[in-house]
Image (tube, rainbow, N blue to C red; front, side):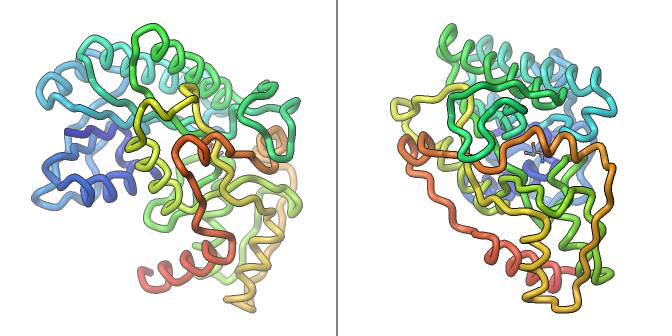
Length: 312
Ligand code: VAH
């Protein structure tokens, strides 16, 4: 059995769809602090709070999961508004899972890190797997600390924990919650709803991004990889595709010629974005588990607009 914690979030929602397709509805239990809006009759949902270790323990004893995906976390922008809550949720949520996984002998754990673990002194272009990492957002600090803990639990307890440093993720099924890269999702919804978008990042702010299809496929590919092939137990860099708000606006105009983009200065998320890399090097993922990206910016824009048009 697989349990997905934080299953109602942007990534959790689509991981649940993919894992149910791969293993069957009965093998995948979704969990979150609140009930989901929709649940079909043969899908199983169990409420849980990742900060309630006793509640998690009884959930795990009841369902005996062989794999846990921990997607519950507070993202970068919201984390700067509620730093203590972000630290508590991101760190103690992870610690509860790490300790229970060791105590109960749970075979495999997935946990997302982020390009947010890099900071102002990390190389900005083709940021390597190993380099100076001085994140200055609470979210990035919690993800870097989480990477150190993950590697520690692998080395000290042999816990098979696997992780990916996701770029910003673009998807249409579920809106992201409080991230700095959310503009790259909102822009598509607004382009179709109003024909225009006021972007909270400056037009030349290049950031690594990735389409949800690629992010979910990468996650499952990493989890399926033979443990002996994995040389990274902190978290794997994934490059995705880097672009600026200007470039994605031009891509949208190729499909919606009347789309109008404007820029709002002074948003606090600009400082967060400025501290992150512009592009990433993912040689370890390609070498250890044969990663390769499928969706470039044109494919992302085309697929987003097609899906939003048919599902509006
Ligand atoms: C955020 N979407 O913006 C997340 C992600 C790299 C960005 O970590 O906080």
